[in-house]
Length: 294
Length: 308
Image (cartoon, rainbow over all chains, first blue to last red; front, side, top):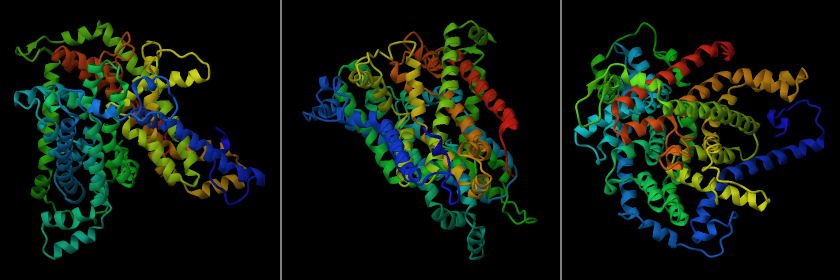
């Protein structure tokens, strides 16, 4: 990497020759494009390989497909005890519950922190910030015991109920930051028009915080869809498997001999994440830039 | 704007002298979160602290054994190994990842055409990186007959089983973590936006070169963001699980070379139902992360530069 790439575009000065000035943007683009290609190559290769006959995957580092082979998808779809449709639906149910839970409970908490004055506000707010950084491992064992005694193992409840109770505190934080940007005059105007606290929340704040709600929705979607640890722990009945848990049991079942169908189902599992990324890029970038969530 | 700085700004913006409290309404709005805090977080934390001093297998009632779990940790070779593996992973992959993120953020911040496109492309792996599908891909790419060896083969270089060799298996996971540099990169980009262009103009009028401008302006002004990313990524890296679990088939192999602390914790707790020991391990992890975060904050006094 050349050191020249580290400077800002300057309107004035510099001892650079005219030729170098013209070449430099081209070089930077070549460099960036090359890095982007290296970054994405494995993923693109996986998509291509999922359309190849199995033995070709071991020989072909390129991206050309000689014999298009879609049987990988058919075989992979039915490789486990349940068809893959089942796992997709299970994941969809968990994701839907998680999104609903996060939207409702986190926005309520955020409204209180951002707009209301109450005893212990600073204390609870700092507790909330601390929980963002708390490793899940510190609570997972007792949570598991709690949920198993409630008879919730092999249900989606352990994956959804915590979201209804705003345990994803990053979103509370994200929404607090967002609400602080909404002018208080709007609250005042609504109050004078006879709105109570709930009215202001529902009619003024919520409609104005749609971008923050969208960010929450997309992040919750992607994280919950990708989440493996808690789904692995709580879902042991193949009928209840979500996509990640099914994929990993697929790895065990096939002992990595049929990369074709394994790749095919991996691609299927990534499609929703990719779509969410395409639709929600704007919100994702904004969300990460303001709070540092991943 | 960061979580770390947010505490200080709380309550700002409200006209002074007007402090009417709405306790009832506030606590009603907070009630789901408070319920979750006590039922799902603090309650289990207290329970886990108690279990750390017991022998518990989920079937028989917990047996109080005092500090035995902790003394057992002192002589548990596999646990020591898992700590070595995890520390190596954190200390190698986090600085590498942040260096790559900073480098590309600086390049992109120059206002290259198509910046939004590159930013998206570089960010995408951060979203995919924690998925089982990508871990499966990694398993193939670094396998004996994997993509990497195929590419090396076309250059006439003989590869090897990167994942089956204990000396390189952890390296493949480091590469995976570095690959997800897009998230910190986006945060760096947001930080770079805050640096006034006139600083650079003034410096270059004074004859400062590119490197000089980077080290004298960009780096010092970006230190709060570097610090924020560092704290976040360290906490994140300590908790890595999925990648190692899938790549090693749940074993942390070969020869425990990818046995992350969290993987060993899972193995004790949910593989062997040794819940007391797993709880003790979980609390030790919390202490480690807490010490690291605190150390980061203390050290930050010497290198993080706040403009205001």
